[in-house]
Length: 151
Image 1 (tube, one colour):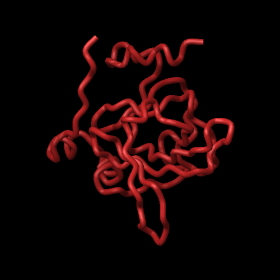
Image 2 (cartoon, one colour):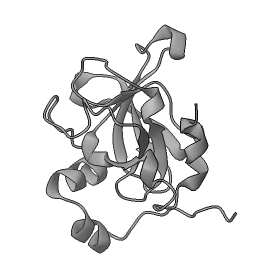
Image 3 (cartoon, helix red, strand yellow):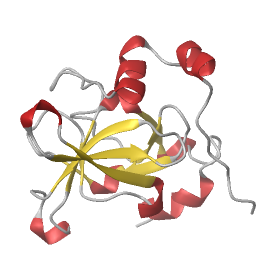
């Protein structure tokens, strides 16, 4: 099977495709409001991909309730899909996470996640994600990830 290629859409494509909040979060590094976003308490099994490029990023298997008001994950689907950058904004030192091909701002990673799952907490903006239910993975071109949900 040929590996899928992911890329950053043009500025024009992004402005046509994304909502205002999706654009501000992914392209300008904004942060959506806690507890007022689409996936903070989402429980369905599936894959979370970059809203801009479609890159697979996280699974529901690694999602947990961190009580922060944003979706939180203990790890990425594939480490090479994420780029980490030091973020010194807002009088803090944090680690920003971006999608590699899409160059989308996703959120931040912190070292205060569940110890038994590696200790990381990827705190991600819902606006940077698109959710694909397990039942739709094949149809959406993500069939290779179905195996992650087989029990």
